Length: 422
Image (cartoon, rainbow, N blue to C red):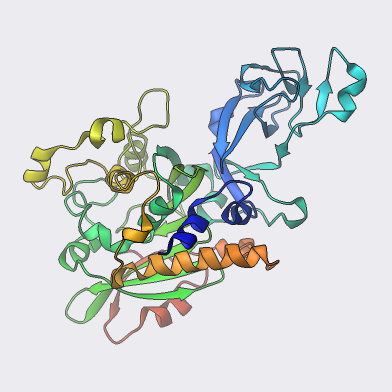
């Protein structure tokens, strides 16, 4: 990738083309549980390079405002969340969830003229979402399948990742890496074991891709050898600009990810498991809470993974030799994060050498770059229609004479269809 395009894709601040594009979508900001109760402690939030403050007012309404008081620049994190607003501890200036100044004790006549930046927020799928773009272009609310289900049907977690969002997100559309870095844990992890898919993934390490651009983003068809008369297809959905749906494994919960820039050199990696038609089984839910599957264990009191760059991701060379872990790192998400973080905060894209199995990455980059450039020229961004988000991934054996694209036109056209999983 040329340096100009790379710079376009990785810079997400408010005054950048990619930053302006991302702000045209509802942005996942934090877990609703981080501000669980009215008048609870406020939480500092950095998203897309902006330093913000989240709090829940006395009436239960969540707010997302500028972190800093406009008086002398003090952080409102040190303020008091009480009686319907956040009050600065320095001189008592107080603001509500819309950023309106409620009280200005020293000069009360100026209160009506004082306001801080705020963003509209909604809560859906256990997540607080914000719209950070022009009000006149606010899109429909998100309707990803997992965020519309009852809370009992899903589990949502997030983790800090010390790398730019793009190199993290690209791992989510690179289905071939599962044959390598995850191969020894497929039969050990409680959310992957006993799936027929595992033997096809491990046996055929070189998937062949067909990719379709769609209203939601990309549908990625990865073909491997199946049985003598079939191909095994992993059908991944990339929902523009930062969502992925993982092809499922056997009877286990479906999976999804989101990669949201904190700034240009770090991101929030979200992981979601869900079942469309029933609550998550108690044993799988417990495993998710323990950091198994696509979730992680944390350093106490944080969203920083226990295995992180500071401790070399707890790489275990003996486990590597014993073929318990291909890379020596334990856990699906940390295996991915370790490799992506090892590239540096922002990968040097000019040095990479892409091959045929990287076609999904190439197409996603092209769509992102094209959309950012077109937005600068006044063209509306793609995938803002909520209905386009109602898609599902699949894992399926198909007759060798049948093209997955043709099959998908019948089988994956509606969320009313059954889950296809091998």
